[in-house]
Length: 199
Image (cartoon, rainbow, N blue to C red; front, top):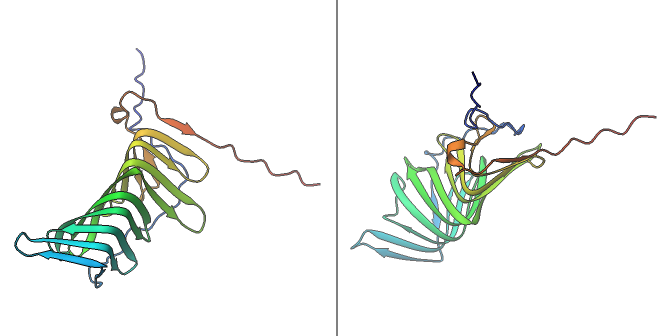
């Protein structure tokens, strides 16, 4: 009997990534919205902001333009377009466009697209970065899902695939075989340099 080949979904590809703290509770912090110009369409319940910056505590969202169904954050979806950046202690995203879901006065998730979109987390020891055509960042689950020529690196080693999921809370990268479109996942491991012999 031939032993079945373990799926990539079960083979969690550890990159010795650093521990990243879960997002802190921000829902009680005030939210500040600054814009160079605005258009409030009360009839259709639509808000358009230009050169917008939204700040809540240590989280900041910037874009050339933002549209939303209202200027509230209890339960709303916002579309940010043009040089979008989302910065938080857990990491930062940069993209061409971003759909951001606000719930209970805080960001719950961000879905970004770019050419490519990028994710980065830097701490005292090393950086973790990734890029893809699309990145879905779920702040509640603590996951970053990269699809479309996905690439993740810890500064030394890297993984490339059609779709990769980086778990912030569990410090690992998962590549499901069923999501690779028949293409292999490529892992590049840089050999550690040997220390110079002592005289």
